[in-house]
Amino acid sequence: MIKPKLKQRHLEIFRTVMATNSLTAAAKHLGVSQPNLSVAIKRLEDQLGISLFARISGRMIPTEEARLILTEVERVHQQSEMLSEAVYAIAKGKGTTFRFGATPSIGTRLVPKAVRQLQLKEAAATYYCDSLSQRDVRDYLLFGQGSCVATIATVEDPLIETVEIARSHLVCVVPEGHRLAARSSVSPRDIAGEPLISFAPATTHGIHIDETFRRWNVTRETSVFVHFAEAALSFAVEGIGVTILDAFSAMDCRSRGLVALPLENSVEITAYLHFYRLRPRPVAADALLSELRSIAASV
Image 1: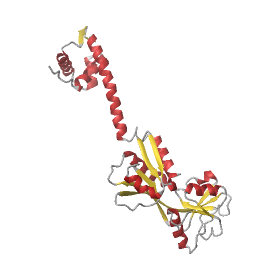
Image 2 (image 1 turned 180 degrees about the vertical axis):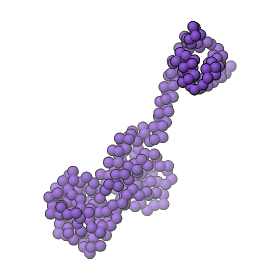
Image 3 (image 1 turned 120 degrees about the vertical axis):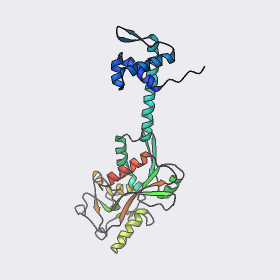
Image 4 (image 1 turned 30 degrees about the vertical axis):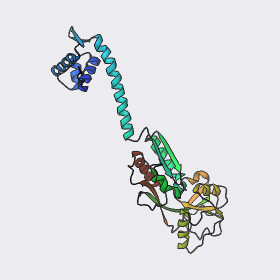
């Protein structure tokens, strides 16, 4: 014979009565009348075919069977609570591994600051940030290697969704003791003759820098070529020359003995977060976008 399934409400009532040892207190806690509570307990006893409580001197005294049942009810209740917490954690992006990519331009300053804020909010258990070159961004997203990619370059592909993080400009980074360090801004003409640490013309930085120089009718002459913004900063720290970067890459450069000066009449630099259109966006990706925007607003 198939036994009827126990109702969750009946087990909740049983657990509350066991905890209070009083129908009156249990009824008050559950927000029901005492007669209705008595009926519910009687129905549970009838369904189980045993007595759960003995009425002695006006008190509800649990039977041995009731105590054994309570042990099982508490075990299941704790598991249910843990399941509920786990489900909500997943819904909020917590307790998961969030994998995403970033190009070095904003992956060395802006992205770490955003991840730090996410850590403080426990937005995910583990972060996996892949450092990517611009040519790898499209395949990284299309083949599902990560949820999104932060970069200052656009991606021309109908399957890639692009969301703007923030806009900024180019800055000239010089050592603190440099002759230009006290200036509020500089132009390409001001740095003419300075050893320039810079990028190849076909790179994202190179294109933006050359466009800005053309506005001043100045030809860019590079003394030291580098591939990444971090390398450009490291060379500048050694006093090898000055460099021109997007403002996102130059964040907090004073901590390294450098000064970032706005480059006059600079082209606008936009930071983006790219997604694959045909894949649902995880909650953690939206959280990352929010933090990136918040931090970039101060640049």
